[in-house]
Image (tube, rainbow, N blue to C red):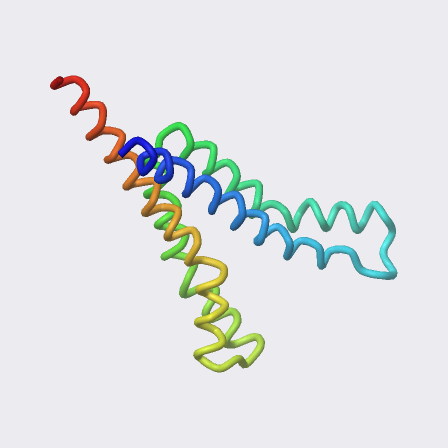
Length: 133
């Protein structure tokens, strides 16, 4: 029982860090030939703003799992239609390819949100169980 609680505790944190790193990789397109180093670094920092926001939400979720879980679930579900339409209209991908892109980008955050919520309730249940003993 202790190992499953520990796994549920660490799994959303690890998945979230990996998902943030994945989203951060998209900022690397800021490095383009023909721009000065300072322009490239400025563009890179601007492209990292979503990663910084997600990192702030991770910090919130680390401290308050229920609120963080709700935030990550809303982010994942809320951004899905936007990312789908953006990819489908801009790149003229098929519906299946656009859904695959949505799954790669937003699905990890939905999973993270659900796992944070589960972790919150398991921890709460475990605390009540130890108080009753």
